Image (tube, rainbow, N blue to C red):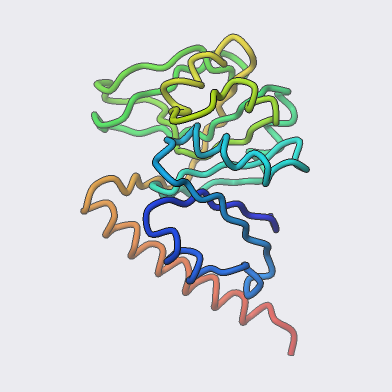
Length: 198
C-alpha cells in the first residue's frame, strides 16, 4: 500500500504536521479534512474524490489496533465479488461489542447488538468495492449503523482474522495499544535494519 488517505477532524493540523506527505516512508499521504464530524460513513464519502482512481480500497478505523493478514483479506474480497468485506475477530467474554453473524462462504447474514459473550466482532478494517459510495448518503452517517445493514442482501462478506485486536475506546486499552505499537515499531525498525543492504 503506497497511497494513503487520512480522514481527519479534531487536531487535524497536528496529524498533518507529524506525517506530512508520507515521503519519509516512501508512501503518498493525502488528507480529507472534516469541518464538522461526519461519522465513519460521512468521512469516507467526503474522501471519495481522493479515491477516484481506485476500483477497490482498504479502509481502517482510527480507534482500533488489529493484526490482519492484508494479502489474505484482499484476496478473499476479490474472490467473493462482494461490495464490502469486513475483517472480523472472534472475541470471548466481551460484552461491549456487537457481533457479526456469518453464513456459509463468509457471507454476512446479520448483526447482533451488544450482549453476546462470544462471537465475531467487527475489527474496523474493510475492503470496499467502489460501489460502496452508492450506499452512503451525503452528510453525517455511520457505516456500521446506517450503511452495513443495507448491504446484507447486496454482497457483504466477513473474513475471520486470527491476530490481536485492541479497541482503544477505553483508557486501559489505549495504554495497552500504545505499548504494543511501540514494541511493533521497534521490531519493524530492527527488521528493516537487518534487511537493508550493506
